[in-house]
Structure formats: structure tokens, C-alpha cells
Image (tube, rainbow over all chains, first blue to last red; front, side, top):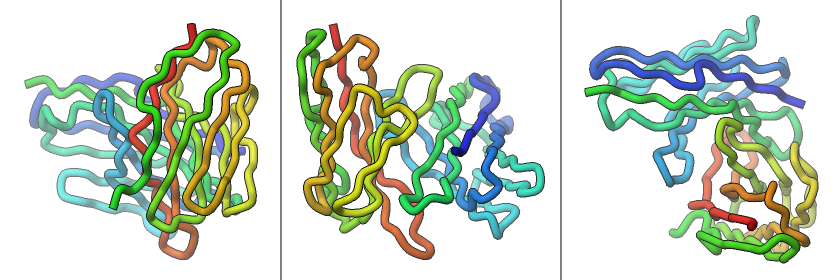
Amino acid sequence: GENVEQHPSTLSVQEGDSAVIKCTYSDSASNYFPWYKQELGKRPQLIIDIRSNVGEKKDQRIAVTLNKTAKHFSLHITETQPEDSAVYFCAARDSGSARQLTFGSGTQLTVLP
Amino acid sequence: NAGVTQTPKFQVLKTGQSMTLQCAQDMNHNSMYWYRQDPGMGLRLIYYSASEGTTDKGEVPNGYNVSRLNKREFSLRLESAAPSQTSVYFCASSPVGAGSYGYTFGSGTRLTVV
């Protein structure tokens, strides 16, 4: 099955700086890569996703890049704000019929004021 | 439109007790999933149901059973709870079809087994 590795596990940045979180996946047939943000005590919320036929996608301060050849994808957050502090999870969609997601282990992002 | 509803939100069990976690979605999604979340380990898939009438094991199915009661409801049962099952459990659902990939998560059940 799919295996997703995520780095770093913790990341601290100054407000206004950029943050980058990286993930690698193992199944070359995976074709969908979402990112979720989870605030303390809350459910994970989808913030951006990318499909395998696209190399980059941007939504305001958030962008995701995908390198299919190397089987890695990254989340980029620019001009970070304290409200960006949360745990971020990457995921890759299994090629099976249920389209189940395999998640990375998460990155605790702290934006320091 | 409630999305995905999970009950209960909190539960404390004694070792050996049983319980069922309930999940219902009102978005007409075909696929439903149960994940557990433990510190430093992300979300791990317990069981999933690709469509009504089918269920399959995920990464960590031992100690759990599931029932896809109908298209809306997907329950998770712990027959004999163990301290290792202390976790936060999330139910999720997803539509199936071209262009429809995202998960909608429930609010979670925080389970403690003592």
C-alpha cells in the first residue's frame, strides 16, 4: 500500500516569513494529494489539493507543488500569520476503488509574533 | 446541512467493555472511512466502505469491526476495549467520481480506555 512521509515534524517561523512542509509518497499510481490543517481540538480541514496532471497550484498565500518523477510534494505558506499555527497533514490518494487517503504524520507549525 | 455527524464526542471505557461509535453523513457520499489519530502518528485508516454494502480493512483493523448500515451510516465497534485503543477517532466521507476527491471529516470522538 501507499506510504507517505512528512517533514519536518515541528516548524517554527517568525510572523511574515515563509513556511515549507515536504512529503514523499511511494505509490506511483497515486494521483491526488490534499493538504489538511487541524487546529487544536478540531477536525482536519482541507486547505488545498493538487492532482497529478498539475505541477503547481496556488490559493492566495498557500501553494502546493508536485514532482511526480521524484514522488514528492510540498506545501508553501507565505507571509505567515499567527492564525496559521496548527498541525498540517499531507495525504496521498490510494489507487484503489475506495479512494482512501494515506496521511503523513503531521507538522506542528508555530508562527511566532 | 450537517455534513458528517459523529457520536459520542467523548467516552471513557473500562478495559474489556464494548461500545459503538456512530457516524452519519447527509451529503449522499458513496465512500466512508474510520481513522484513528494518535500523537506523532497522523491519521491511520481502520476500516473503509467504498459503497453501501461493502467494507474493507485499512492499516490498523485489529480490535475493531464496522457496519455500513445504509448509504448514510457507518459505525465502528470495539468489542473488548483495550488501553491501546485510547485515541481520537474520526469518521470521514467522500463522493466518488471524476473531479470529486475530497474528504469531509466529522468532529471526532475522544475515547479513553482505562
